[in-house]
Length: 525
Length: 96
Image (cartoon, rainbow over all chains, first blue to last red; front, side, top):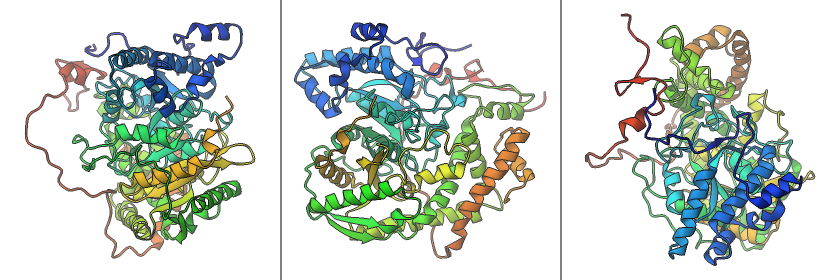
C-alpha cells in the first residue's frame, strides 16, 4: 500500500518506456511533422542564448509560454535522435511558464524568470521521478527539491525535465546509464561525454537554454568540451549538495552548462550560496559574477602546465589549446610555464578515493526506504537480489572501494591515496602563488565513438585524466569552446582558478569568447 | 592478476552484491587491471605527508539546537516498497 501526499497522478513522462512520447505540440509543429517537414519555425527563438532570451522576455518580444512550447516542440523533433532527456515534465513546465508570464505582467522580474532549463537526473526534483540513471532508483519520486532546484524555481526558471547521466554519475560517456545512451548532437555516432552528457546534449541541441550537471571528476567540463559548451565546475562547497544523490561526497559538486560564458554565469549566480543543510557549504558572500565579465584581462598571469600536454593528447586538441593561449596573450595576459608535478598520480588517487566514498554512499540502496525491492530467501538474500539492480560500472566501483577500504588494504590503498591528494592540492596551491589562472586542454581527445571504450573501464577512466586533478584540490575550473578538429568535432580550453576565484576564470573565458567565433557554431541538427 | 576469484567473491559478499560466474570472471580481470594501475602511487615517498579528506577544510559546523518541522510521515514513507503502521516494513532479521 502506498500513502499519497505526493501527486495522485504523476505529472511527468518517462522517455525510456517503449511507448511513443506524446508531448503537447504546437499546431505549427504538428502540421510540420504531419507533412514530414522539420518544424523549424522555432529556430529563431531556441537559438537565442539564455541572456538574449532574458532580454527578449524583459522587452516583451516573446513570452515564457512561447519559449517553453518551442523547447517542447524541439524535443519532439530531435530528442528521439539525441536522447538527452530521461523524463520530461511538460505539464509542470507549461504551468511554470504561464506563472512566469503572469508575474512579469504584474511587473515582477527575477534573474531567470520564464527561462527553460534542464536538470541532471542525480538532482532531486519534488514530484518528478529522479533515478540517477539507475534501475535501483526507478520509480523514485523525491518528496523535496534539491537546494539548487529551489534556487532555480525562486529565480523563476522553468524546469523542462531530467537529463540522462551515467549511473550515479559514474562515467564519461552516458553509456553507463541504465536507460539509454545519449548521442552527441555534433555527430550522432559519438558520445556527448559524461557523466552529465544528457544535460550537455540538451543544451547543445537547443532543447534547454542552460542546464545543471554535477562534476566529481570532470563530468561537466568534459561533456562541455565535447559538445561545444561552456561548463563551469565551481569550488567545492560554493554550491550546496543538499538534495543531490551522492556519488563521492568529498568530490561531488553541482556544476552548470551554458552556450556562452554569460549564460553559465547567470545560472551559476542563482545557484551559488550558503546552505546550512550542507555542512560543507562555504559561508562567504556571493559576488556578482555577471558584472565581473568585463573582458579586460590585461596583466592576468596565465600558467601553462607541461604535464597537461603529454602523450595521448590528440594533435588537433593541442594545437587549438595552444592557439587559444596565444589569444589570451594577445589580449594582454602574461603567459608563463607552471608545474603541477604530481599530475600523473591524480588518476590513480581518484580511482581509490572516489570508489571508496561510492561504496559507502551506495550502501544505502537496500530496498527498504526507496527503490524497488527484490525478495530473497532472507534479509541478506533480499539485499543481494535488490542490489543486483546496480549496473556494471556501479558494481565495479562499489567493489573497488570495498577492497580499498577493507582490513589489510586500507593503509596501502585508501590511506596512501588521501596523502597523494595532499600533494595534488599542494601542487595547485603552489602554482596559484605564481599565476592567477592555469590554462590546459579539457579533454585529451574530441568525442569518441559510442561503444569504443565501453568494454575497457581503464581506457574510459583515462578520458578524465585532465579534469580530475582539479576535483582533488580546492580549485575551480571551466571549459570554453576553442576550436574544432578535422572532423568538425568541438575542442575545449580548460581554465582553472584558485579557491573561490570563479570570477577570474569566468572573465578570462569571457574575454577569450568575445574575440573568437567558436561558441557561435551550433550543432548541425 | 592481482585478485583471485576467491577475492572477488569475498569483496562481493562484503558489498552485498550477488555476481554470476561470468561477472566474477570479468570483474577479476577488470578490477585487477585497475588495481595494477592505481598501484603507481606506491612509488611516492609519503612518510611525512598528512592525508587530505576534503577540498576545503571546515570543522564542527554547528547549528542552534532549535526544533523545526521535518518532513511529513506520508512523504517519508511515500517511496517505501513496503510499509505498515507508519513504519518501513522489512523481512524478519532474527528467527521467530
